[in-house]
Length: 77
Image (cartoon, rainbow, N blue to C red; front, side, top):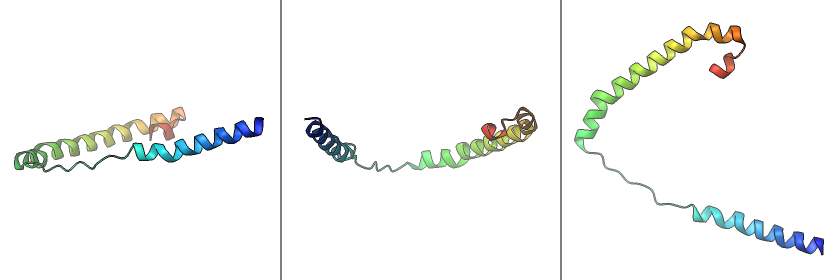
């Protein structure tokens, strides 16, 4: 009885595992950005993100010795 019940459970679980990925299928989003949004991205967003990246790297470099002393350099990285 137990073996038959186990066989049914495995069959149901296998069927669910095969069916659920097809439920998650979605269509791709096709976007066409306007000229204004591309210009704003090029002139404002990208330079601000570059400065933010440089500042973040600077903060990491300054705080690295303290992280190494505390023994959690890997976590801060």
